[in-house]
Length: 468
Picture 1 (cartoon, rainbow, N blue to C red):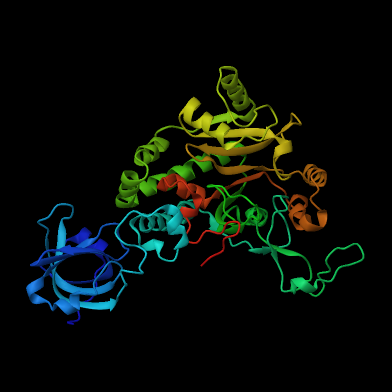
Picture 2: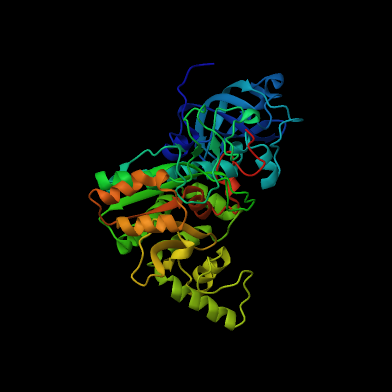
């Protein structure tokens, strides 16, 4: 074949250099035709749109064309012309075709028909080749770029916190352990506790559930930082909203209190949504048309209004009023209850019809590090609640008072030996500071309109599933 440098299909649709010789490489989505002309829909992953390759069957050997079936990978030289057909504005008249790799139609699982999401999870190694997952994973990239750009433009520093840790930030106890020891041959002391002396770190170590505590240390030196990395929760939760391995974004900022923290969260999430609308038009349109007819409208509506600021106490009152008027919730609602997703969504979708930031939760249902209010009952927590998702961001002003933090940690059973370094920042030059955590996949659920969190991460890790 004549050597012409390759152009991505996205760039051909963007620049439309009609009348020029071009080279494209990609995977065949479909092939059809009649006795005179063949049509191949070719996709190279750079865009949701396929490039139509038009083949004059008189010019090509039939034996060469036979293996070009759905899933095959080909290299095409040809002339880019304006398309006569509906559905695309450019096509390539093929002059030379080379087959890189065939795909046996009897065994290649992605034939031209609708596949269920469950089936596609079983072939997660091939699902990026579908329109849906191409769109979702391109949007995943764009959201990562939006996040880094947002914080970079505001003078935050990207700070890398450890993946392997000896502390349980949330006190949840649901952590994956990291060890080099032979699990069949564990040494125990007389009380039955495992002896870690011979292990790699000489103590019990786990995969992190959050980079927050370490990010706070950095904020107390560098002013404003954010983490963006994988976190791990060993919860046995088989729900459409939980993963055992997911990504978290956690900004921590010195010298800001709860009100500024709420504003930062609102600005941040609006920036990401705006980025999706500006940079992912084709993918969004596809997901809107195929999966979630209200997706683009919902994204636009988030940008329109200020988020509601609402105290937990007022929120519970609204929910109790709803129950009094006959609304049925699966879970009971009372002051002190940890709100369920159905409660959060009622406030957002039915009562206010826009996102809500809920604040001042009872201290009993929140972590030890949150700043206590003067009422002795509540803490300066904030959760951002979104339509269809429920909680998308959780954060708080952090307790900067050493005595209060120490006492609260003790009450909640967090051992001092695990957090002595964290307490030190309250002993040496303490300052008010705040932060929050955003589950990256929850954001992706919202911006893509997908309904299951396993469909917005390439290889989901869930109970009894660590394939690929």
